Image (cartoon, rainbow, N blue to C red; front, side, top):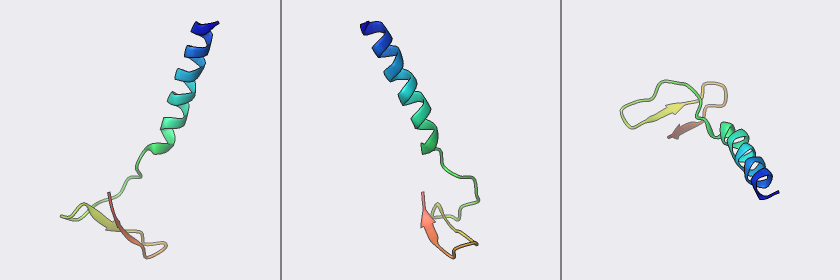
Length: 44
């Protein structure tokens, strides 16, 4: 039963970590860029 729980927890972590991927886009020399749709300027 503990092995099944560990596998389920590992699968849940693997699935939810996908949402942490950064979006693509060119950055300037400071590592920042402007979102042309919203006008927001942010850094990574």
